[in-house]
Length: 251
Ligand code: PGA
Image 1: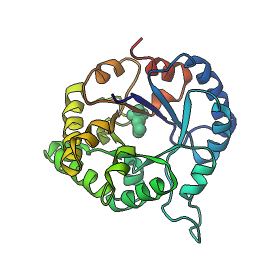
Image 2 (image 1 turned 135 degrees about the horizontal axis):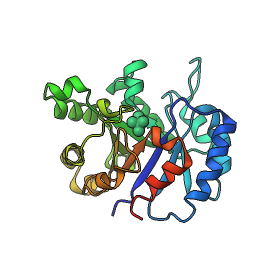
Image 3 (image 1 turned 180 degrees about the vertical axis):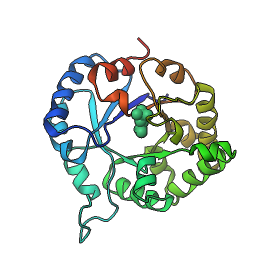
């Protein structure tokens, strides 16, 4: 059985003190949750403080990005070991905002995935089509390319440590969610790709999350779908009340 995973992606929001203060109230709000894995992804600057604050709780912490090289002259970049050193166990890779504004490609995603795995961080690889691609009926081609190129060269053992987040670009921050059926279709397709690339066993274990305007009102319908194993949540994760509600979707 795949344990549901709910991720709060805070993007470029919150100073250290704001992050710590919201984590304090989140800890209390989700203290009784055992059936869902909870992950928060604050900005780099708050990672160490947030990791300290969640110690001993049921909340884990991840970074929003990293660079693949282990050290050296790469001004402004953060290595996998540096991320791990703050206490993180996960890292988001290839979020559509990074692909769109910072030139990330399937090739850089692949390098980052390998860099993360090499240090023992679980990568959360983001994939998804733009509105134009959906309208041109190339969604499945885009998804297949993103998966195959992003996971190139991974062993089956490494593949099962990866989490996939399907986020249609047109649904991110727009209030426009994919319908549960639209999302399920893509999720089932992603699982099939993994079954073909590796074997059923790997495909069965991989968690595939949906992202794009997930909120406390639409989360349970999405989670009812057989291949949706959790959510990658932006806006609705910025406040403890809405994120806790969302995490407790089955209650
Ligand atoms: P959103 O963001 O929930 O605000 O749409 C999701 C994401 O970009 O990960």
